[in-house]
Length: 76
Image 1 (cartoon, rainbow, N blue to C red):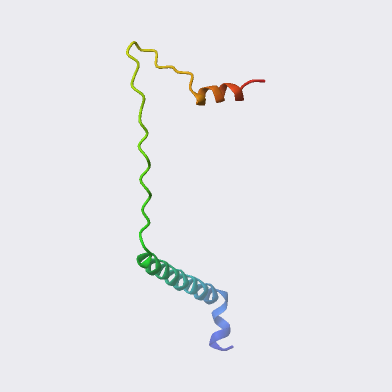
Image 2 (tube, rainbow, N blue to C red):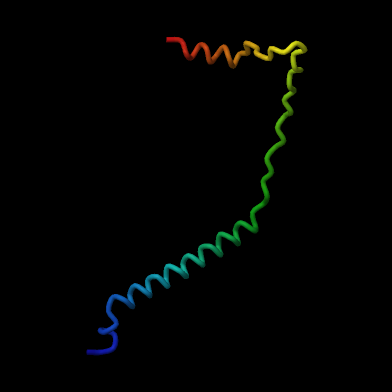
């Protein structure tokens, strides 16, 4: 028996995990390099929505289009 036949599947597993480790490290390095070169994308500023003034005597419920749509969807 020679030296290579005695190594068996245990050495194959360690070699495979070593390959996986180096492939993963290489992929992570490539992703980091690409990410550092890419331009920064900024979200556009959204238009400010003007809030309605609060009612003077309470009773903040209003029958808005959103509420009307909800009531239409719940009809049987």
